[in-house]
Length: 91
Image (cartoon, rainbow, N blue to C red; front, side, top):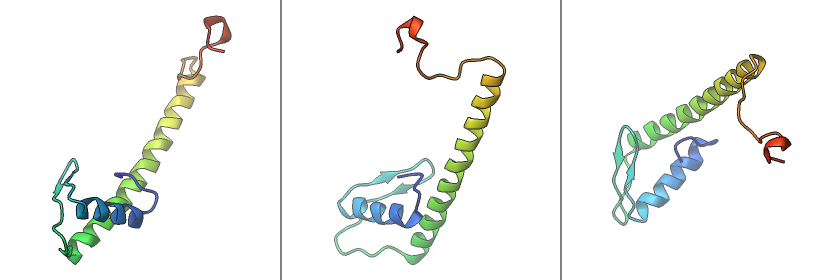
């Protein structure tokens, strides 16, 4: 939910959950459940789309950094996880 591929999908999911009476707690804010028929403020919708879009970009940047770090560790001879060699019962 916090790092969607499409920010609109996350916004729709958030709306469904909140309309179902669920309060969402994020690291920096709390989105209370919506009462039946309550309409969300347009400013909140715009800010939510921007936040979800930023989360998606942050997720991609973090993934790239992790891959680069694993490559550097492997090149230096360190293990980066995965299955153990067959001598250790991993396959």
